[in-house]
Image 1: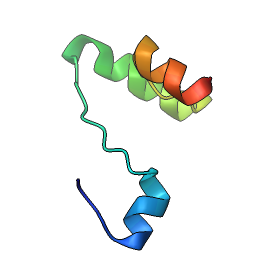
Image 2 (image 1 turned 30 degrees about the vertical axis):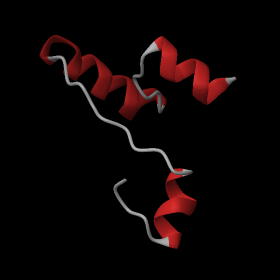
Image 3 (image 1 turned 90 degrees about the vertical axis):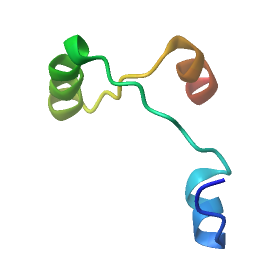
Length: 51
């Protein structure tokens, strides 16, 4: 439970995400985000977000 204000709930849909940074993937993930707008995420998270 990070931001439990009304604004926080509206912005996050009540979800909080922990990040795992894998050093070998950082540069490629950054480039894809900056050049293509693609956010790196696991298959499990992608299924929740895109389904």
